Length: 151
Image 1 (cartoon, rainbow, N blue to C red):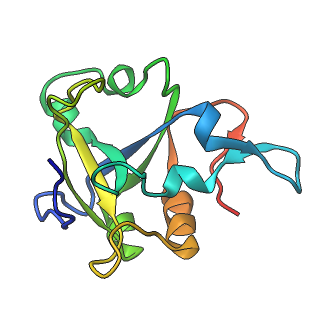
Image 2: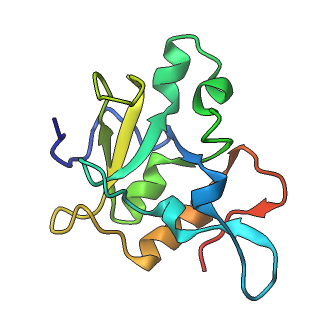
Image 3: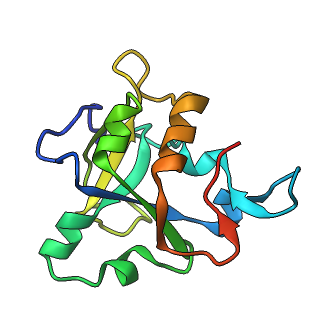
């Protein structure tokens, strides 16, 4: 069941949002410098059911006493970036809870959230919004030799 895009007041502006990185999907070679960088897809909504950018909420994972770096790292997601919720809101985006439960082929994730676009267009981020998220991001689980950047 899809969650209607919204902005969750219980997610405070200084709360840390984690975005998992799949090297095959989210890392590209920069055409100008020849170095590796994150792709704009890392900071884009998915084509999935809820149409937001899939994230994990640090404080929820920590509240359950889990090792956060281990939790967000899987064979598919070998890295992750972090940014504060205020970066989401400053970019004109919204963040909310969207726990994953009982989805065929997808592991349950009670710490899952989504970042959505504006109320007028929740399934779209502008290039400016993607760049703002990239600029606000730092590595949570670093992929060595990869720069966080959206051209």
